[in-house]
Each structure stands twice: as C-alpha cells, then as structure tokens.
Length: 207
Image (cartoon, rainbow, N blue to C red):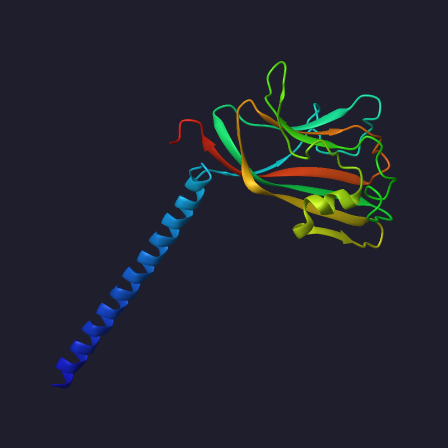
C-alpha cells in the first residue's frame, strides 16, 4: 500500500509539474501575441532595435561644431530595404555651468538647431518639421520637448543636460528618408553634444 501511495503521489506531482509548464507556456505565448499586436498597431513587425547617432558628412557624431557660417547637418538615413519607426530622440550635452537659460553652458543660440525628417535623395524636401519651426536655442527648450525625461546633472568638471524627446505617436520612415538635425551656430565651446534616434526596423516587404 505504501508503494502504491508513493507511486500515486509521484504521478500527481508529475501531472502538476506538467500543468505548471503548460500554464507558463500559455502565459508566455499570450505575452508574445500582445507584443506583436502592439507593434502591428503602429505599423511594424518584429525587427531590430535602432539606436543610431546622427552623424555629419565625415561620419562624426560630435555636434559641437561651428555652423554659424555654413550650417552643418547631422543625419540618420534609413537603410535601403527597411522601414524604421522612430519612437524617441535622445539629446545630451556636456559643459561647465549648465543652466536653463543657456544652451549647455554657453549663451542661448542665435539661430538654433533644427530637427526634421526630409525626403532624402538629390533634392530633399521637408516631410515633417518635428519642432514646428521653433529651433532649439536653450536648455529650457529641451525641457519643453522632453519634459518627462529631462535633467540637468551637476558634475565635478562638466555638467550634463539631457532630454529624451518621446513622440506621442512613433514616426514611420522609409528609405531614402532622413532624420536631420542642423547646427546653425558656433557650438565649439561646448564640451560635447550628441543626438540619438531610438526605434525599431522592419523590411519594406513585411506585411
């Protein structure tokens, strides 16, 4: 009888373990379906994450340049054969004496930095002006754009100002469209400035 009871108990445990495994698999499958439907809702299928610095013609991501005479565009271009959904844009600057009324630690910019999506190609035209024709001139402008994710952090040498412009609706881009930030002032006194596009990719033939 004892042996039979032990066998019965082992069978019950085995059944319980199998049931737990099935339940876990069901929950995981449901989570995957929800994630896929969420992505499909914004027009994407599962793809690779995009974390791309905007870069100049020399492939440099360092935006602390002099664009006061000749504006300097920093670009992320969609790879041929892909769609890209940009969810947010991260902006960060290092400099001493950062304050809201300055840009980094230098005086408010005269012309400001523009940020838009253009059509690409030989004669690009504006597809979307992300800043609604109001360029970034001060740190406080970054706060207005990314108020939920904006910070000024005091450092021992340089301070950090950072913002993440999280878009109300992700921006879908197709090749040859480009995300372009243009420096139109002398920013060489800044320690550093960068912008990063964050999102997800899909192939153009995905359905």
